[in-house]
Length: 184
Image (cartoon, rainbow, N blue to C red):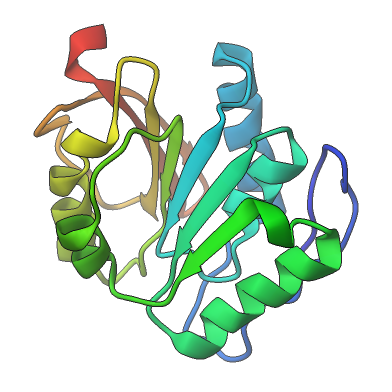
C-alpha cells in the first residue's frame, strides 16, 4: 500500500497485521481522489472514520489538505496511523482518536469537515448507516462524504442532512458520495 500522489506520492504505508482491517486498494483510492479533486480544491480539514491504516486521510494530506482527524477504535492500529504520519512528515497535521466512531460522533463538538471518509468493515452495514445518520452536524455546503462499502450493499440515498450525489462500483467494492441536502 502506498500514497498515490501529492507531496509524498509513491511512499509506502505500513498496514495493520492480520485480517482485522481491509485497506482501501490503491486503485479505488486513486479513483476516489480523481473524483474529489475534479470537484474542488483540497479542503482545510478532513475526517477519516474507521481509519484503519489511515491511507485515505494521509493521501488527502499528501494532496494538500491542511489537517486530518482519524478515528480508529483499535489502539495498536491508531498507533500505526501516528507512525505512518510521522514517517511521512505529517505528524503536525494529524489528530488520531483511539475510540469508537459512534462515541466520537456523539461526544465531539461538531464542526464541518471538507471531506469525510467512512470505511467500516464490510460486515458492519449497521455501523455505516449509524455513522452516515450522525454526520449532518459535521457537514456544510461544501462538504463531501465518501463511504466505501461492499458492492452488494446499497446504503440509503439520504440521511439526516445528507443526500447521495454519486455512487461508483469497483469490483466487489462500491463508493457512495454524499453532499449536504442544501446542495441538491
